[in-house]
Length: 311
Image 1: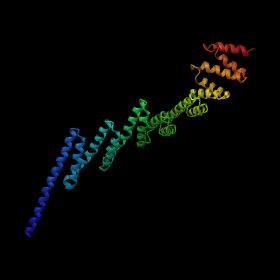
Image 2 (image 1 turned 90 degrees about the vertical axis):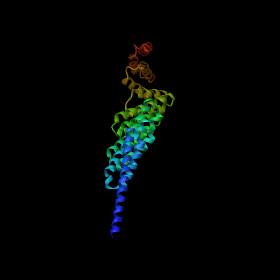
Image 3 (image 1 turned 30 degrees about the horizontal axis):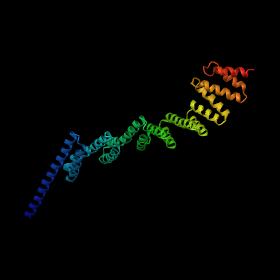
Image 4 (image 1 turned 45 degrees about the vertical axis):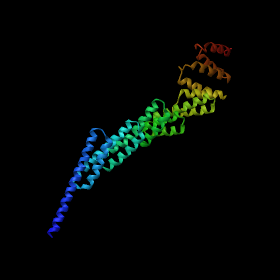
């Protein structure tokens, strides 16, 4: 019996020695991790802390504090690695690392780090997209902004920027979808303005290409969002080209109401007068000719037409 007791005691002593050795080794690994942090060697620090954690979890209660310290350190070190990737412009790898941060921080109960990691994903893509948009690199801006919006679908400003980029790329339907999302998330006025500008640009391009029906349609769409003097001008010009003089008159007059001091106001006024004259509405023709009798370019012609119509 005495031999059995001695054997058991020897086993306990041996286990205690092994445990103490493991604890010492785990502590050394943790300290190495702390030193690596001081040297800003984040990859090495993470490796040390992970090994210390793994070893500490096999030791038992004696290593509880060490395990807790490792779990506190690991998410922050992972976050620093991700931030370094962001600063280096390696956003794809940064996004992958941030996903790891969220996972490990959540597992270890560090919600603050997890939430910060989540917020960094849309923020970094938004920054890249906004910078590309600023220099008119729309092809680079659009995918970055799309990734930002996917990570944070409630950010109206991001949706607005994405709509702008897509609009410049000629992706009208996708741009409208982005602008609608912007409107749903606090950017209604800005989204309307952008939609109006998008269709106005489309109308202008159609007019230059002599696609007059398309120009009218796009300009009317522009006005459905925000009334714009230039949209009425385009409709007037396209209508005149199509021989729809009544519509041309109506839209030219609306243009003049909104932009009475426009540089081409004299020319448009003369055109309206001539269109009324062509429609045998001499009273209205005279009214508009009289508006430009002092115009340096059209005044003389207007006076001649007034004299002719007044006979």
